[in-house]
Image (cartoon, rainbow, N blue to C red):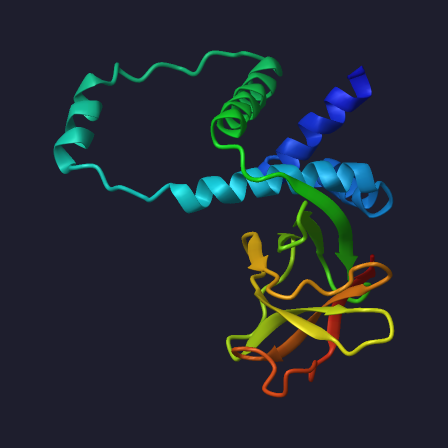
Length: 215
């Protein structure tokens, strides 16, 4: 792995973690739309992080723990000046922690498929599938929430056939969907439409298509 590949891997990890900000994040988003390999790297990190969310449950520590921590803290002193090194060290430590998690809790192998874009709409969806094509994962990137009375629904449209619903997806957090009857994905189109809450009542798209891509 060369220097550029290592740098891109670190940027993809920071992007997925949400620590890449400002102009750097905007430049990285523009690269995602034209570099499939980079989008696949982000999809890998988002999939790993979504698994972390599913396995961890928040626990509120007892009040006595907070009291012991407060008593153990040293007296306040002026913050030392580390210059510009500290943010990079912090980011490096965070990426290292995620790498350890990736090794310990590696999910089933996923193959990147495509990136769903919507010209009038902000955000993207990074799509991956299991090797057996029996599961599909969508990871939203900066996708806006929808109204409470609406839902986002994923469709696959095989060449020359009617759309087939793959289920509802969330604007925040990866969605992992089973494909009971795997439709032909060759030359098919994946699309996310805006539907009434709970999904289309007709079994076919009824609302506008917000994101789509051809496989």
